[in-house]
Image (cartoon, rainbow, N blue to C red; front, side, top):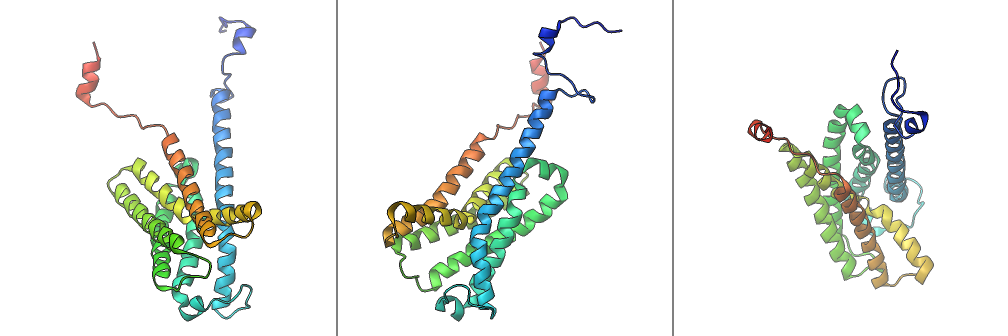
Amino acid sequence: MKVNNFNEDQASDVPQPNELGKPMTQITKVSAKAGSAKWLVAALLLLGALPLVFGAFRVTELVGGAEIMPADARFSASPLPVVLHILCAAVFAILGPFQFTSGFRRRRPGWHRAAGKLLIICGLLVGLSALWMTLFYTRKDGTGELLYALRLLFGSAMVVSIILGFNTIRRGDVIRHRAWMMRGYAIGLGAGTQVLTLMAGELIIGPPSELSGDLLMGAGWVINLVVAEGAIRKRPAPHKQQTGSQRRGNVK
């Protein structure tokens, strides 16, 4: 029989093992992390769903369904870019959140790789179609030069981020791959945040002017990128593996 060398008061401060021998504090941390991941996925799905509802209404109208939203002559004259943009954005918004949860990646690495390839294609089409519509559709009434420039800037940044994310994973650089894909996803999810910034702006200052409307739209992209950069920098730095000679040198 084993004899404990500490009393009950001391034992209360020591992580207690469960039936499998794992400390309870470790299990609690894992459970909390899993719960946080579920909330993250749910929040991102909800944020992405906001613009997708309007997008679904627009696609329904363009394919001959009921006119739920006011007709837009720009889209009716050239529907392919906007339909492609909405469909690819739907895939991007729905699959994207699951790519950022470490537990899901570990449990389903095959799914992560397959979904990642699809997301790269859809993300590029979202960014490129957004640039095409900005350049070739007539500008919507109530939007100014600032929003035009911001759309070109962030649309290009999204495409570049996804390309860099693809190139870094081909070189086996997982850390930079995740960082660039998070940036690209954050920009792509800007439409969801813009719904919130426009609503908040209208509640605070009333119906926006051309300039304030452009600024509120730009704030959606900026907020998402700030949050993404914070998440990227919060990740712990990977431990560098020592070479054989370094390990031998550490032995005195």
